[in-house]
Amino acid sequence: MKTIPFVIVCLYIVLLFVVTWATRRLSRGGMIAYLLAGRNLPYWVVAPLLTGLAVGGASTIGVAERAYTSGLSAGWYNAAWAAGAILVGLIAAERYRSLEVTTIPELFERYYSVSGRGVGVLGQLALQIVITSLQYVAGGAILSSLLPGVFNFQSGMLVTAIVFVGITLIGGFWAAGLTNIINVILIYAGVLLGAFLVVGKVGGFGELVAQLPDGHGGFDLGAIGWGIVIAWFIVMCTTVFSVQSIAQISFAAKDSTSAKRGFILGGLIILPVGFISAVIGLAAAVLHPGIIPTEALPRTVLGLSPVVAGVILAGLWAADVSTASALLVGSATLVVGDLIKRFIAPDLTERKERIISRIAVLALSVITYLLAVSVSGILKTLLIGLCLTTAYTLVTLMTLFWPGVCRRGHAMWTLLMSMAALVLWLIFPGIPAFFSGIGLPHPIYFTWIVSLATFIVVALIDKRTIRSAGV
Image 1 (cartoon, rainbow, N blue to C red):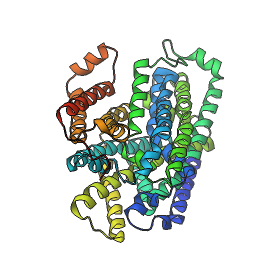
Image 2: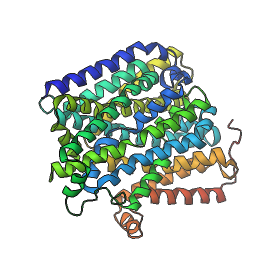
Image 3: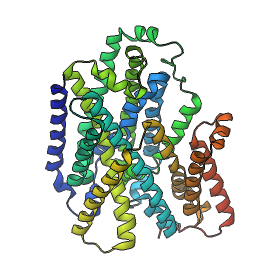
Image 4: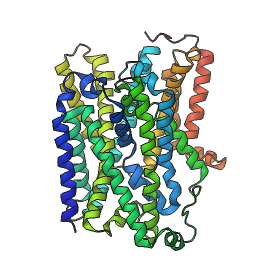
């Protein structure tokens, strides 16, 4: 029962490293070649790279966990991701590619100030480190739950780290993109096969509905609460415009058209995954009542045949690896481009840029691994962390589409105030209690209100216009 799934996972790992090694020449050169794929990604690589970044532990394990208690409505999480990706493709991806920048903080310095870039890179790094750490947690949970005789939680996290760090170190952004084509295929094979078989095991959708516990959300798409669903859409449509690892995909596209097509196609691919994972969580509520919700998906898969369990295991783990690789590249780009090259060593040779980029990848992987041991509640933690993106999105979109109202102090002060707002939400229980009382139960509402208010105040006080030409 354990040997076959283990062999399938090992074959998957070997395939990833074969692809990575075969394409390593594509990343030869400096930081742009290694961390931005030489700005040469076609749309058919942009789409799976974006999909792999979006569909991680939160989209599979996390959604099934919420669906175990809240029903199919947990799948709205991925629908929100898809909506955000398509929105970027329609209105911003082409503009991002035409800017010829490497990071969001670099954009802030170009139009605003050095301090705006400094605050921007610290916030981005904090956000990406939190999201990356969740991938270790999900990877460890997947391997230890489905192969308990082979991995415990700690060794599962370590193997997860070795795989995605190894891919990134060897092949950079090109490797992340090309291996994500394999990952996305395997993800869909895993979740579709799992959903089909577990529903059949229950006796079909009719029996699944009939056997759900009293009061369970079932197939009610609003069971989780429309306030939460709307918050997810706000979070994700905010996030996709301003998280470095997402924006970097458009920065690395072959041209503006490739960026636009890739994001729209990626959004369409992302859309169904959450609802499929939610079906597995629903079936778990019938097959395994009373378990810890986090175990919903792994426990259900354990009841299937070894070959099927191996494919599903590899697919779930692929979701984790694909997300982590792109995040690690994005974080390394922030460190190398916004800190080292900007403030410490601006005249690095291409060879030194590549060496330092690899060192940054390795150092960040160690930091995120250490953080991972303290993380719990995958989906909840991720959605709170993503609230940091409100100010980034507001400033970025206003810069691109309404620069006339932007002032030099906007980047720094809007970012600082949104960060402070999230800290206050987490420290003082009276703030979330008040907002929940008026039907706004998620911190994204509070951070957006604070960001907008700060932007308006700065626009009224600060008379210094931004560098409209970006010079």
